[in-house]
Image (cartoon, rainbow, N blue to C red):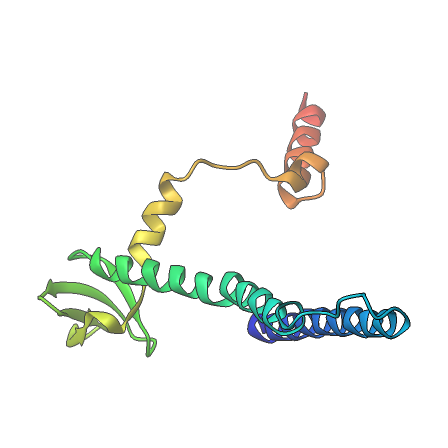
Length: 166
């Protein structure tokens, strides 16, 4: 979905830039026909500049985020430890039992079946996410501060019960 929106946005920006440059060059042609001394639009402004702008937009919206995501995935796959719970690209969930040079052995299911996988097949390290969530500082819920969340409602109801008991 994000790629569709990005491609539509890029094509719209490219169309707008191209249309504006053609309009400017047409205006320059009209002005040149009125006065023979006015220079016309150059090839750089009508063809090369829009392509450079389009490439820059594509780089920052498509290529750069994908490279960053691939780099994060690769570092996650290299930081797998014995005892981590992982999810493979095929959706197999298991516990890492042994780590080799380019493969890992995971234990799955109640029967403790062992499966040998390549490290590139690992899509997610569940244990690492849980550790990061436990170490992250707790953020205040903005909805609770506004009195819109269930936590705020439960606190109010507890206060009312405590007040009524007294």
